[in-house]
Image 1 (cartoon, rainbow, N blue to C red):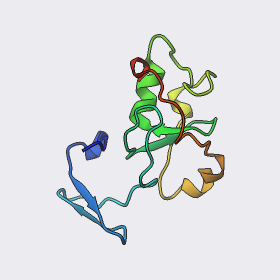
Image 2: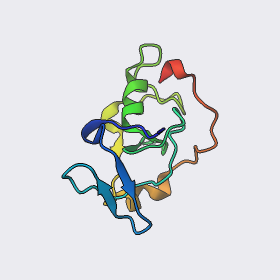
Image 3: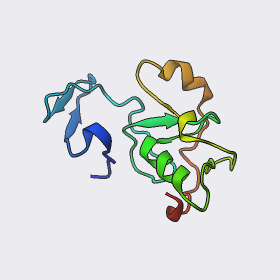
Amino acid sequence: DSTRRSGRNAGKAKTYTDSGETDDEGDDVDEAPVLPGFMDPLTKMQVEEPAISPYGHIAGYETWCRVLRNTDSKDTCPFTRQPLKRRELVKLTHENIGEYRSRIVETQNAPRIDPALV
C-alpha cells in the first residue's frame, strides 16, 4: 500500500466507495480525500493531508514539514527556492479547497526532488 498515513489516521485502513462514503475500521467518520488520487510531487506517494504553499504548490503536510526542517535547505520552498515557513502553509480541506483551487500550480509531472531533502 503506497498511501502515506500520518497524524490521527495513522494505521487505520480506509476504503472509499464511488459515492464518497468510507468504510473505516475506527469509530471516526472521515470524509473522502480532498484531492483524490493526488500524488505528492516530492515523495510520489498519494497525499492524505494536502497543504498548499503561498506559491501555489501542494504536497503532503508531513512532507512539507520534513523539507522545511532539512538543515541544507531550512525554511526554503523546494519548488521556488523562496523563503517559506511552516506557518505559511494552509492545510486543504473540503471547506476551503474552493478558495485555493485557482492558486494551485501544476506539479503532478514535476521531476522528483532529491529524496535526501524529503
